[in-house]
Amino acid sequence: MVAARSVGMSKFQAIRHVILPQALRLSIPAWSNEYSIVVKDTSLAYAVGVIELVREGRYIIVRTFEPMLIYVTIALIYLVLTYAGNKLLGYLEEKSRIPGFATEQGKI
Image 1: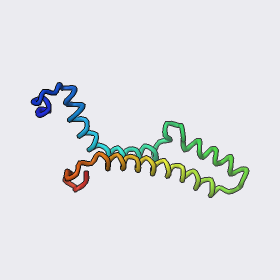
Image 2: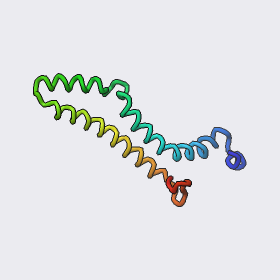
Image 3: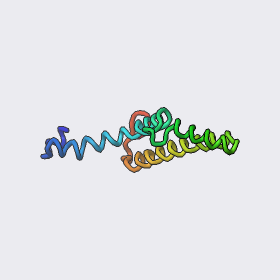
Image 4: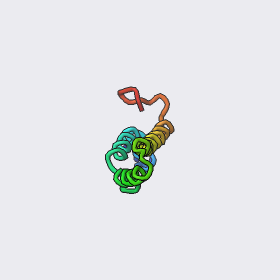
């Protein structure tokens, strides 16, 4: 902030162009962890909820008598949601990497 202010940036410009890009870049790995936890622990705001999926699965099981197939399909839906979200956040992390700059653990 001090360096940005010394070259004539306003506080808003310093936050927008200096502080936020650094903070966002370093917070992406934590976001991918939180995304996985939220998808697995909640029902994704009831849009694609466990209860709804299992209830629909039970309706299908009553008609088809294939419970394993239905429950595996439900599990695959959550696997795809988690995997796709983590891949997207991994891509964002890779795109925001600064060459030659690493944290203490050797990761960005």
